[in-house]
Length: 422
Ligand code: AMP
Ligand code: GLY
Image (tube, rainbow, N blue to C red; front, side, top):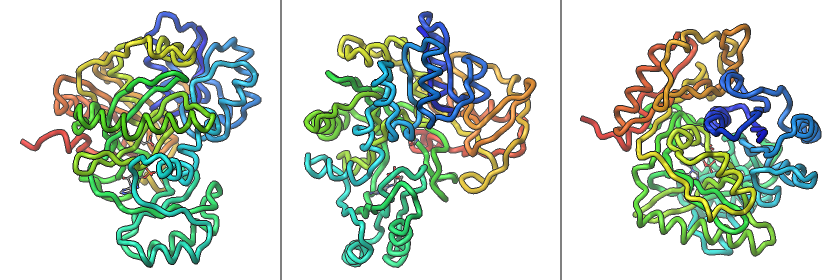
């Protein structure tokens, strides 16, 4: 089979890595890809929002299935566009993609279906929003309704700050958002929970904990994710069934009732408070960097899983996972998540021994004449697995030491909640 993976992050490199292990994958394309995908797939330099060109590439290369990595093309309707042309796609429809594309849509769906989530209000008028803030408790969470590349959420510790941020959003700070969502602050521990969904059923697709803050001890600005480990330490059997019964199943049923069954990866960002799950957000795709650790742990052939999903046969397939613990540490460019350095050569990557327990997934990299350069904020994902999470982290840290790149930084404490201090 010929496959096309859309995207250029660590997530897409990890998906390509796993697909390459399948003997039934013939041609593998990544659009636009990075220096890591270039080694195992054919990179195609094209804009991921140019659906017409993507369709031409699918036809020219006889692509059998297209796998969409990032949210933006999904929210903009790539699945509907390609499916209308009879192309097989893994990813939700434009309507279903609103679960991530519009926080107001997601919150209203939760409210109608009694899905536990933080109390909230959705506003498009400043005065009404301001009144709501005056009556709310502090901290209050201010969110842009639409996609905002991870920058649309602010936890405000004063009413004044919340009012200023609300005004910015309603004045068009993010093109994608005309509305603001104001939310109760939930205290607890976060958990990333994944399922894969077809029209008839769904399967659990792993758990992880991400580390969104840039600084050690979870301090500083929010990022796209500085590292993750799997399985999440706080996912007990009891919690797992609560998540399925109270959050995942009512959501999938609600989407069916709306006439738009959800299909593809669904990632629930949860807050666990006193043993109870609350939905913070849905993502309509795999997490990045969570995907990197899950692809290392996945035992079942990924192509078979994707085929079963796109054929709506998922219930017939048992998805198996390695019991090992897996961790990924993100090596970022200095300055991230603000302005960061670019186009700096990264040396010594070839000195790192890669095997089934040690991988480097590229994100913001490109290659010229065999040399690797940085171009993104998140640059490399140093990923290791072991029976013990601390050992896995030590392997990633020792691999990081071998990399010669003085323009980067990373968190040494990924997994700290699960790795007890000695
Ligand atoms: P989101 O983009 O919705 O995932 O929000 C980014 C991050 O903000 C989440 O991962 C949480 O750490 C935090 N966050 C969002 N909403 C809330 C909330 N209602 N209470 C506490 N923390 C939140
Ligand atoms: N790791 C967070 C995300 O993928 O949105």
